[in-house]
Length: 297
Image 1 (cartoon, helix red, strand yellow):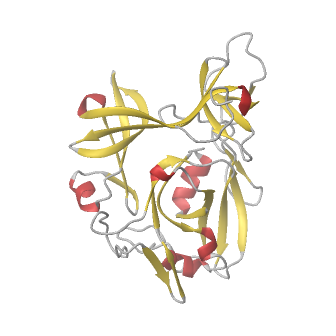
Image 2 (cartoon, rainbow, N blue to C red):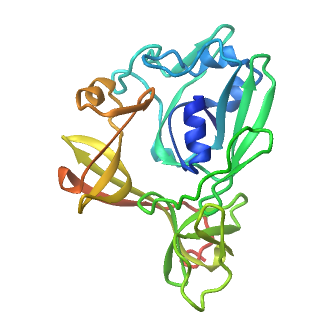
């Protein structure tokens, strides 16, 4: 399935111009809402939530279309397990005048390769404005998009796809078709390691056949903070101590707001806390099936 996620103008610029690479929130099947106008998409994507930055009379709405990520990150939002503000209704569907479609919720994960950012206008006309290539190359903007060139920003190593090649661990993406892997290094490879080129994202990338790769897995780092479940999406140093950026995965807006978390979008909450404030840290390797790596060939 190709999923579709609506993005506000501010979110779009943050994502593309900042060369950010994660996505989270309510999504629908792109085919289910094809040919809808911007106003209809406002209803279909449930953009009238409290504090919404979206305008129902806007001339356009930007939508990110991407291949379905691993099932571990996709939830059918049904009450009482899933709690959120209106227009969320808790029955697993979204509706607009003249139609309805299944609704899904995506916990924060890295954007899949070759994802496309489309601008849907009031008359339902669509315009491709940017493409997320992969973990090494990041975003490419089209000349008519109005975006500035994406900034240099290396990927976080605590989440996303990982490949082990010649005994070295890299951030990675399995490219479309499954026959090749893009390796991404945040610093220049050591002398003697050839074939890497620096990308506009500020890291070094190399494409290798998947059969040359020792391992491929998707890394999930999770923990608990104040007794609630979170995904660790970034690690940094601040005032001499390690801090974690956490994305809430408990799917209860009341709990999230009671903890004082930052709200990024409907159902999407995050915070930054010292490493010492979290418990039950674990790292999970989500291993895809039927990839012809050295370990499976």
